[in-house]
Image (cartoon, rainbow, N blue to C red; front, side):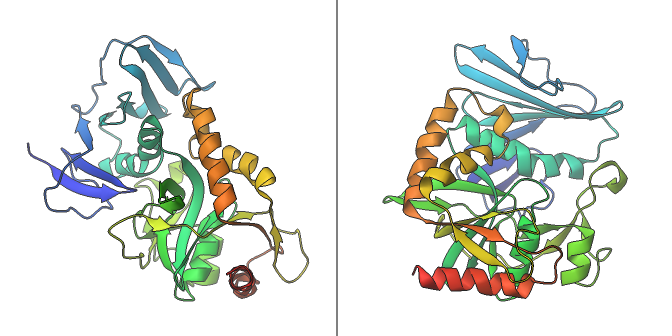
Length: 319
């Protein structure tokens, strides 16, 4: 079959169209296939779809095979739609002519692949993960919490990026692992200008940046890895302004961390109901096995150097 082979977030992917932002790999065993329909034609699979979002942008269909998932992103008459099979082995992609393929890929590599992993009973947390001095740490928080900005501060100090926005959790020999993502950080204008000096010099996330929240990509060094990396710590990003001057770390006990991790699962509103109990068990094991803290930061971006120092000191203290 004609197409390209890739690896992203632990997935071995074949796609009938090139996936923007990923580097093709030699042919290899595939566990996820991406197939596209003709532009403008939706997947006409006749299934008993039931809405699972109030906005009407996602549906599930219960079948003898399991629960199918369908997700649509729309703006006026433009749309892109993704249908994922019950076991997360195939994604069928449809979109209108006026939606650039690069925008479709942006959705695939983030929310859609996260949903594919959830279909496979894999737990994903909304987090950015970096590796510094042989320690792998994740910054957990909702959209706008500053995950990428905090990671960028560590990259300035020699860290390598493991994954931005999605932490794919696994377990090897009783230790929590995370899978490698793409070598790009999503940067807001204020963060890019404070840490890099320019926002316009970065690569736009969206072909039509006026129709999406304004972020751009910064190319960074990734952690070299042929297998998932062992996770050492998660730090929850508290709202800014919790301290006046110097950043601080507040230890978080597992009993508090588990519900916070549950809330911060990626694409949490689309996870199948039966999977919540599984995720709770996974995250309880994670919370019992790694360092957990809350990162308290002052308002603004002036204390990023001190933020790096505070996390580094915390990791040394618990080594």
